[in-house]
Image (tube, rainbow, N blue to C red):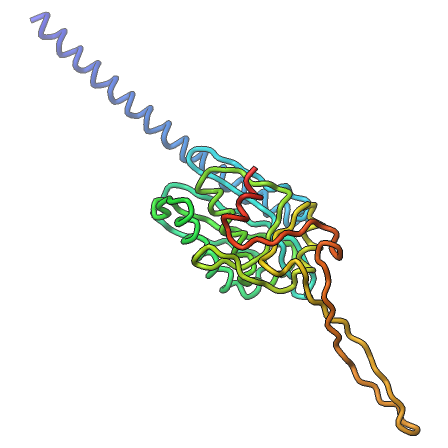
Length: 269
């Protein structure tokens, strides 16, 4: 009788201990999930605060990896609505998921082309790394101080950042790149090379990567030509093309790259 009562009490005690361990495990899991969520929110709010303070151009790209979530950020040259070169901040987050692609774009004009580049970047990153991106959720965020013209010229940068996030690697913060991304991993031509080179230098980059044959750019100088016809002077405006060396004109080391694989050799430290 005493033994039977002892066994019953022991079973009750074991059951309570199991429930206690289960409850503790659940609390730990909930705590970790909340910590991961707060980390993501904190980093995104930090980037937004930098944007509001006008400090994106001096921001040093960061790499953070914790609890299976990787943040990779890099500066990307772009053109604002007035045609001036500016530096934007690209952040890519990679986390275990179901293959979703989420986008948070701020102050970007004509962003449909940029969104298309994100889809290609995801495919190219999967091909190069051999990683099944359907097992990851990718979050792309672009922050800019002013209204920036979106397009395909950020395609190469998007691909570099995606690959780094998937491979859990940091990137060289002194390198910036412009160029479209093609499905085969090649880097296509873009416009406003000189303006983007100057923006890269202003963002403290020391190396600017451009597509093939674009280390020399063509700029256009507008002049006024006037002729006298009797008592009348007729003036016309002429546009004169001028080829310039981007490295010499912008004051930043400029190198041509043909593929994402070639560009990666400069970005991986």
